[in-house]
Image (cartoon, helix red, strand yellow):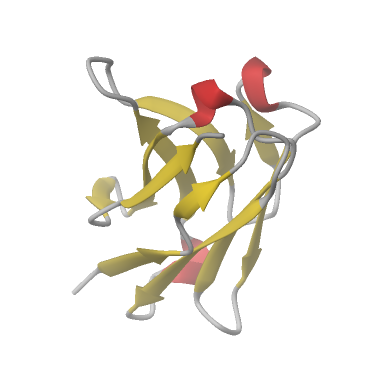
Length: 115
């Protein structure tokens, strides 16, 4: 069974940094494409960054140069390093796996950027 648990969210000032983690259970992690998504109040959920099983990455334009996605297959963990945070980065952040043609979501972690 695929389970994903995010952590690392919190309150941070503009310009600050946070690192999100997504711990995955099961043996699927290493062969899955993993992604970070976010949903701000009143907005649709959007892709933030994605990393394939081979390590290729993709970032939405608004976070390029500020966010970095990585994975540790030995620890079954996905990361999102977020630097130079902006007010508009405030959202609930979710990790998602694409495994054997299916999507699995974590429960989300809140990131609030506020002064």
